[in-house]
Length: 466
Image (cartoon, rainbow, N blue to C red):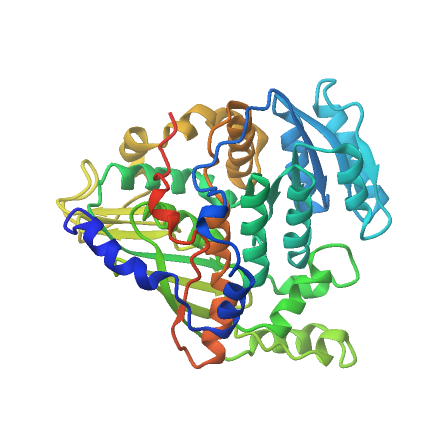
């Protein structure tokens, strides 16, 4: 923020940034009272030793995991060495896909299935360099921690963990073992998100003031899947038992990187959160299922829509919304507002002071659709341009999944820092438990835990990779 003396502002703000008033966070701090900054290895810009070949194991190959392992099998420099899932047919499906795709590179894949602890045997047996974790949310933390303790880098589906205590344990384990633990926030690799990141780095919209992020996605039909093997087995239970923003990172990850949050410039400070009444899920159960059905015996306490406001150390604001219940179109909002203009998503729109050349005369109307062609030509992220053709071929949420996985492999092979560090994964995910506490306290502000222990000021901004 060019009009601020950042160094003076931050030196004053940091003294209070690590203090939390919530009981859960105070307990989490107690767990770490014997671990001083000088005795832990900071992972903000950590670069692991180069890996010529990356031996990869995966835990969980349902719909999401199967797609990830197929794409990884395609990327040169990878060897799939182990696949674990509860179900034998899912393991066999993924093994067959990897062998077919891998051009001879994945011939000795060890298969583990049948009970909930076979993944531990897999880690002990195959000793992978990296582990992909694509299971239900409650397993993410323990699987990531075990993977790092076994000498592997951990790559975890979102969220990185469910509780604040789990997040501290992940940070401590990563620092102690010197192993990456990256939450695989794929949305950061979408074309629009990379475009906006590039434009923010070039200061096209000036100093950044405010962002809006969301996960608006009607997923009520998962309640019809409880007897199958998808997310309907476990995800609705979170909405039944918890009241807050349960899935913040798809929207928050990109805007946090636009704003350099947790990297040199600024940091999360406090959050307030409110939920609407819990109506939609209970109505859906009555309409779709018999009176004696499981969901009609369950009260869904989570509000249909949650809105949270985050305040940063520099006073900037981020609105984060979550709604998996209401009948409305999908959106992540993806808005970033600055002193010279605004970038917004769904649909992609741009307004600049003085207008967008060739599209608008001033900032009172949006440039959108075909009128953005020149913007894309000039500001498309260089990494997207480099991987666009291959990403479109491989797919995965429009190619963002493949770009993310390709970039992970690239960083491990070249021995350079990952685009998302362990602290960012925890800071974006901790919105969930903090929002639950705030909602339960009538919207009382909650202080963010500083998982970096004040060292985020040392972390370089995310580079625009050429």
